[in-house]
Amino acid sequence: MENILLNQKGYGTKILKASYNLFKKNWKTLILMSVVLLALQVIPEFFGESYIIAIVSSIINVIVGLGFMYSVLSLVDGNQISFKEMFTRPSIKDVVFVFLASLVASILTLIGYILLIVPGIILTFGLSQATYLIIDKKAGIIESLKKSWKITNGYKWRIFVIGFRAGLIAIAGLLALGVGIFVALPIVYLMYAKTYRDLVLLSENDQATSTDVPETQNESIESEEVEIEVEEILEGDQTEK
Image (tube, rainbow, N blue to C red; front, side, top):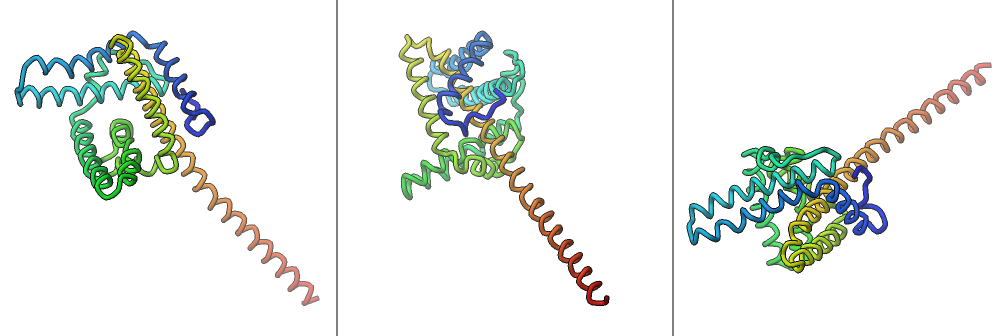
């Protein structure tokens, strides 16, 4: 999925179709990953109320969840994936940074909802890409939140639309006798990963454009100054004659 779709007309449908096509090419690995991811969330329920199991389970779920995000993003970038990447790709640093960034984002969003509902909603979408920035760009905790806010500028509504479509797909998967969620989950993750990658590319393109403009202006100014100097020299020569 090399083309940027988020800035195109009908972006929601295009991202969904691109994600579904990518899922079809890698459905075996993605479904296996989905089964493991969901199973790890259910297994602790069989051990009753145990704080130790709950903590260990939460850590494992974060690691596997990040591994799934790594793999899906790798697919979006045109790479091949393997099942073991789900457990080996995330580092301890990634887990800690994602946890702390999510904690800070949750506090900020909560404050936004308490003050007024709208700021909370804006913060939710504005900070939504922090996890991807940590695992993809190795951004720091605060840095990931700042960059997320930057790359989502002007695209928060579109992120909402993608999220709404993804939610409908997840619900449809649950209604399909429950087993449909193993198909819906990878497609949803692919949609989110594609949205993130488009946001990064759009932000980089904007930076390149803003960098090029001053250089062009400087060249124009320099050319005008040279022309003025030449005219002054010619006028001076004519006066002497």
